[in-house]
Image 1 (cartoon, rainbow, N blue to C red):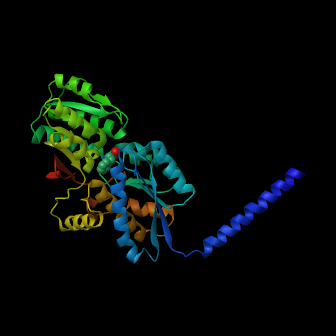
Image 2: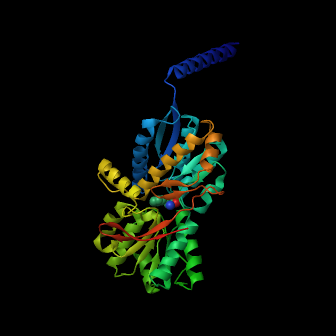
Image 3: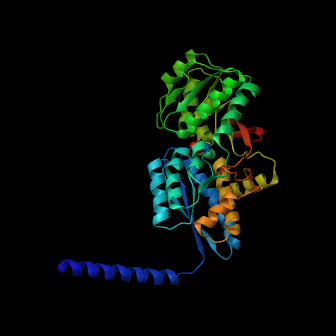
Length: 383
Ligand code: PHE
């Protein structure tokens, strides 16, 4: 009997709180579309998150001047610290507590791979501006991306090594804690050997994120006498590898993917380490396109630093979402998903965005040379 009372009292309390919440909700000003954004704001890939958020906020300011069908776009940011578990938790919180209708993020593929099945299961659309691993969008129809994939990026760099640099003996260094790195290592190996090149030594030399001493690994590679090194990692480790390699007298070019695209790379690699390496990425701040130049100018004015790839990708993804919301029948997740997935010919800073039937974007990549002053434009490669 006593317990019954307790339960009754509890029920009353819950009902009252819920009623109060409903009243409070109804009284609040109408017209906010809530979107969640999960990015690494701290940790070893922090510049990716910081740039993404800068780009998104810059875009939001423009979008919210006019609003979308009378509603403002509200983005709730969460830090995934560059960790898959954190990314998954952040997505759960945004879906269950904040009740967002769409998610943006994350950057490193392993983190988006951890988050995507949760969004898919909850039927909340998730757009990643940056995760290039093939598997990311395979989580289901609610998961899409506004960037190219590693099947493309890896081929671009294998061809660049063999055809443009005329290299024939590559060594591969893989970050074994990253799905992105493992995927790119495989794509490069297949394409480079298909073109007629050789992979020297072990099929790949492995390290883990947060490693800081790469000398013994580099020593082993040096003995195999490669003429180029494929290093599809992130800037924190790649920068240190470049520095240590040059100190060991390894003056051959290192090639990377978009994971190197951070101003911190220059700082870590130092003036010798940075020279004469190449990466593929999503955008070049040296692109003459007036739309790109205008973006570079505005961004630099606002944040006192030049935008990297993630800034441009973040800026584009918020506009792609705004465009989809304008076309969506309602602001319900199902309608938003359909609008996102039918995005066609959207003109972004990072190129022309069409979401294809596998919910990937077929876009051009750029090849950039790493220099002490930043990333210098080399070539643009169409899909
Ligand atoms: N493509 C990388 C990944 O999937 C992330 C990245 C994108 C990093 C763009 C920098 C710039 O892990």
